[in-house]
Length: 120
Image 1 (cartoon, helix red, strand yellow):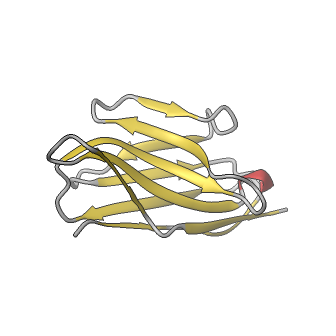
Image 2: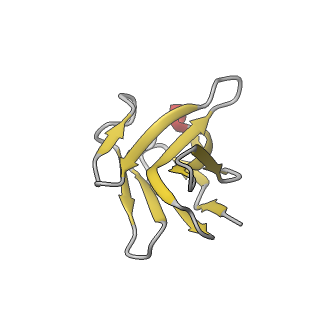
């Protein structure tokens, strides 16, 4: 059974930094992308950062230059380094794994989310 465990959220002041971690356990047939989403109160969930299997990355315009997604040395670990945090970054952050099953059907796995609160 696949489990996605995201962590590292907390309360931080404007301009501060946090590092989110995501550890995936269990067997995934084929990972396509490893992603971080966020959902602020009253808003839709949005994609923040994405990393392909080949290492290519994409970022939402609102976090470019401030956030960095990376893979850890351990298999199936991904991080989100968040610098120069702003109040607008306050949200629950979710780790997402986009993958394929043995019949190449798309399968999404989600963490339970970790809350990031940026205070002025």
